[in-house]
Length: 120
Length: 112
Image (tube, rainbow over all chains, first blue to last red; front, side, top):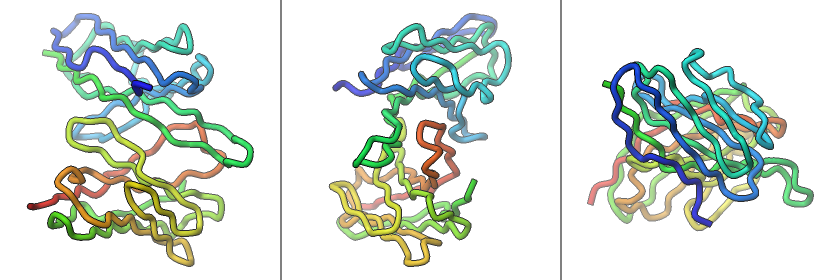
């Protein structure tokens, strides 16, 4: 498997523009997470999905941020309009999490390479 | 959620063993101890996890204290590629499928 795929890897845009980040999770994983990493706040959750349904979006900063998962193999994170304070590295992760019989709890998350967003 | 405490930074020389400590004095009986690491300019990656017994895999070993209030991630022979931020994270069995909560972790520097 190619692992979690994110695009673009780098994005530079101007304040006020719309930005769309994309993620393809590992096939068969039921959970998809969007995290953001900044020097000030470290790694923090934005939103996560289970079976394409948003479960917890409490980390989404404000209405300018939205995320969708139209099918099991694709998710987007959109910022509209973008602001300089949105500059960060955005990571997507997927997980096969769950109780899996004799294997016990499966709880490992697999991260993509991230998208480095710069808003000027 | 139970909290973990890690040193901010550690240094090692190449090909020497590295012991990365993590204190978790308020750990509950069903909390698993997970370790992730983040190499420069990459996303975090899973390293190892355990509950009570010591664990080994191809990347590292995890030594868990008998009272489970602390654990140590062991890299048996550090390489330059092991320079990363290492995160110790507690995960209750009911947290499977929820977000990971990252602290500041330990920044490991490896010198040749």
